[in-house]
Image (cartoon, rainbow, N blue to C red; front, top):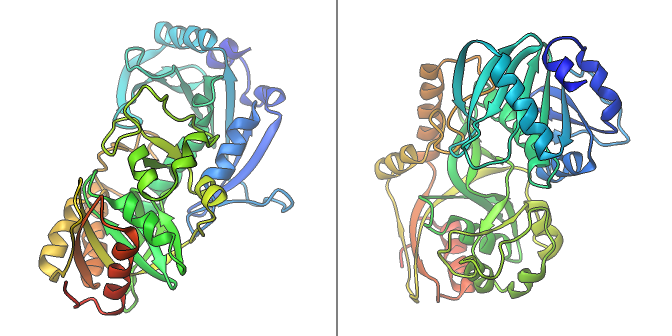
Length: 397
């Protein structure tokens, strides 16, 4: 049946008999119904888009979904079946293949088939084979039937929401975020600067809540503080960071993404292998509240120092803040989600860049501080320092 579907001999609705699971999501004003052959795909969508916000929202199971504008079907098959279907597309596709990147580590190629454009992950990419078929008003995702591959439908839904959000004026920043007393703290910096660690420590305080990890979506309106919501995705942490946060028991957590084995470097502070835990899972296991959105009331540029007891905070002026923010702005030009591979954008690159500059200017006008702290500095002292800066950003240590 799938071969006939790819060849244009079967209608896409013929696949619905295989899709016993269903969930509906709202992405930047677009309502998409996900039909899947496995509950793993729908469960991960539910967890990924928790808590709901203005950009990402799962319609409650007991609420009737209205105005559905697109459908995504996800079929999970044995790896050999997916690979065989992919070879069929490569041998029968017509026209010039178009190369894209689903993300920085996932090169893929669009092929034209009678049933519609078909995307194949490159066979030498080191990732599970995957097929995405595009039809008018719908997508069909064919993945391998292992746990990680069945999460691909959720990742593709996030990609759709990301590009639509950019069209609607939102900007993605390489930043984590948390709140204290309901006030938003944007933690900005390069990988390894301590963004995730600091955001989780702030969220764990008595009045704290966790907002986002690594990618934060921002919007700005005249006369109002910029607003922040999360780009849905897992929190990625080394074992050393978990222990410093007081969660040594995390080694026994049963998570959606299985943790790295004990013979890898994930137990270190700077290991390449990390724990992948969704914010909803972090909430379930630590009790840390989750924030759906926040205003940006303070911008923090952290720098964590290995093996140190350092703690130093200093106010930062708008011009260097603007330069630092520009360096971490991902709209356009994300260094991980490198291309609009589903062709969702309606805005051109110049318009996206202009809007990015506008939002960055608005964020640069917020109070900002640089913060140096060591891996041996008590987190209570670090978070109290940020709390004081949130109250009086001009304070210096």
